[in-house]
Structures are given as C-alpha cells and as structure tokens.
Length: 258
Image (cartoon, rainbow, N blue to C red; front, side, top):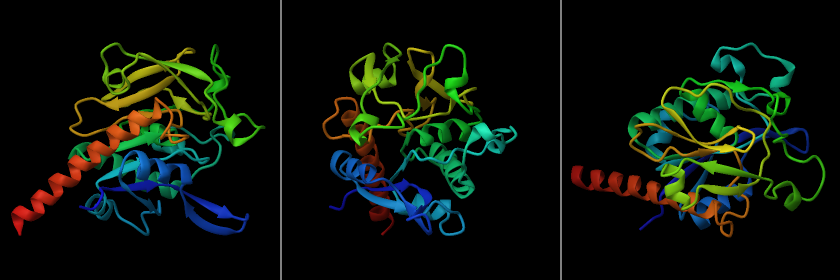
C-alpha cells in the first residue's frame, strides 16, 4: 500500500542569488519520509500554479514549514513596517486559505515556525513583528554565527498545559527546544489554543479548538534531527498517523464509490 502524501508548503527563493526556485529544506522532507512515514511532496506555494482544491484532493496532510519571509501584516489588518521583514505574498495567498479549508474538512496539518504563525493568522490572529523588542522577552532569533548544529541547538524550555494536547503527545509538561524566529503571536486567532509557552511568555505551541483533524503547530523547528530528538519524533509520528487515517478514509471512500 502506498504511503500517505504530505504536501510540504515551502518558499519562493533564489538559487545562486539569481535563479528563482520553489524550495523546502531537506530536513523537512527527511522528517516527513523517515519519521512520519509519508511521501513528501514539495508544493510550489503560488496560487497561480496550484489551487487549494487540487492540493486537498492530492495530499493527505500538509506541513507548513518555516522560512525567512514573514506573513504580510495586511493579512491581520496592520500596516507594513521595516520591522516586519521580507514577505512572500504568493505563499500567504495559498497557505492561509489552505489552513482554513483543512480545519473545516478535518484534514491534518502540522505548522512549524512561519507555519505556526500562518495557523494563527489564518484563524484571525495577529503577530508581533519582533519578539526581542518586547519588554522581558529573550532573543528568539537564529544565532548569526556558528555551525548549522550550533544554530539549531536546544536553547530554551517550553512548558505545556497539564493534561493538554501537547502533554498527551509528548508525555511531558516541559521540554527543551531550539529557537530560530523573530516574530510571534500577538493576539491568538479564534479557536486558537495556546498550549505551550517559553519561559519569557512567548507562545510556542498551539492547536485549533474543536477541529476534527490534527492541527498542531509549534514555533520552534522540530524537523531538525527529527528521527533522534525525543520531542520532534513523537510530533512527526503523530502527524504521520493522522495523515494515514485520512488516506485510509479516502481510499475507503473511493472503494465504496467504485
């Protein structure tokens, strides 16, 4: 039997500073294939090329990845400033609507870093442009120097709600995570449950209240060393199991209608 298909929502970028590409990090595809047990499919994040309806029918689940571009503040009713950084309006146009449709259908998705922020914005929430500028907050950004291992090393704790969804998935109320983000949740969207916080009060783990499917999203990067990290592995495994349930249901529906 074929594996469930997970659409990986990546970013538009430039290869060698001149050749435009649609890309997703290798660590995302490896985590989906080797830990979630699904077939990774990198999606060109542009509604001029793919439609939400096509993606919903083609894929069994979606991974909304991190990336340098931020969600444009117009998506949550605020004006653009220099602090908001760079943008990918095509990804905004595709990802936000796709998240809403997945919530409505019960189709599973997993949000990571920018994907975490997309989930909040898609549900009506807003973002701070720069967490480190807020009183009492630490700098959550990627260290500018060092090896890739040093940039992704675990840097702060996240504490989850006792008896909450993340406690159930991870079997712990406190875990150690990496941190490589500049923005963060300002106001949570409708039905967004903040289920985990960093020690400085920054929201780090959310899900959509009352959604039928897997809707977990985290502000850190669990795709890093996902097969070996005790926090990353169960998240990707549970996401893969949800995609398998969706795929099985889709196959049964096709068989019943044949």
